[in-house]
Length: 178
Image 1: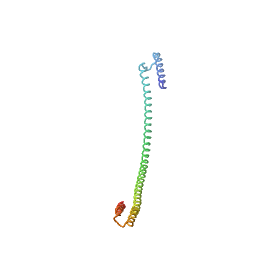
Image 2 (image 1 turned 90 degrees about the horizontal axis):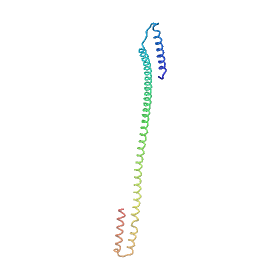
Image 3 (image 1 turned 180 degrees about the vertical axis):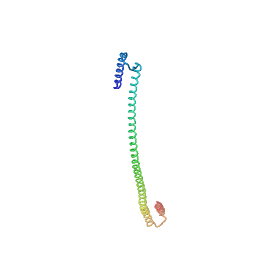
Image 4 (image 1 turned 120 degrees about the vertical axis):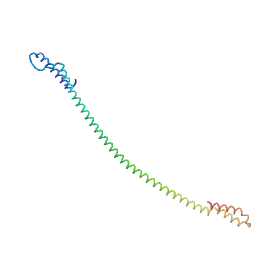
């Protein structure tokens, strides 16, 4: 394998094999406990497997710790963003309310000025039309009146001026109506 402990365990295997082969050759001369080669292989593999399990568990716990750390940082950042969003929404609502109030106020002023201008315009029109009616009523039938006076002065018979009288009556009616 590629890590240090696997190479050291290989060295341990080699040392155990060397000891067992030297022990088997000298087994006739020395006494002690000897393990069969199958049992030795089981002990070595279980030792290697327990070391690998410990390393694997250590690696898994490191991965889990980093994952929890990242989740905690993400949750903290998410909470911070949500808090900033709430502040921004509150500020936005305040600004929108102020703008709405300003718009309502300006609309009210505009409507008031529109009504005032319309009233003043109508008043001015009535004044102008009233002055025109007065001048029209005074000046409208002047020519016809002067024609009637001239007709009465020139003619002895008043019946000859009847057409001028009818015209004067129509002029007076028109001046009164308008």
